Image (tube, rainbow, N blue to C red; front, top):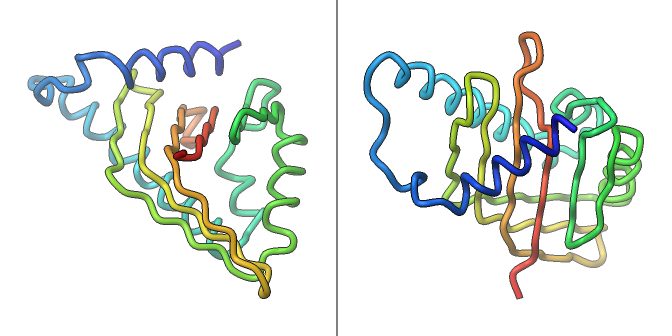
Length: 159
């Protein structure tokens, strides 16, 4: 349920007018900047892990509880075992993967949670055929113990 609450907060934050307000000032500004920096670092690790097709590295970046969810074009995989299967299916036959993120925006939700939204182009090739997908990526990240992890991922294709 914790992931669902983060996802709801992410959707509300992504669509509300306060995401366009000025950067915070005062004591909370440093914490907000720390959350943004940490979230961007995890997202870059995620992007690189996809490009080198490393399930092991990706596994370290996702939460492993029952609520972790990846939604790809309307199909949800919930729980780490389902996500691991999805990643193996997606990357197992790929000879090359390229991810490009544009206009990455990170919105700190709390000291231990953030939402990120970006335009994403993903190219996956098996050596003979290349599939290119373009759309919007939304990630909800949370800090558990000392590590930031992906609690929810949603990708919708641009039509």
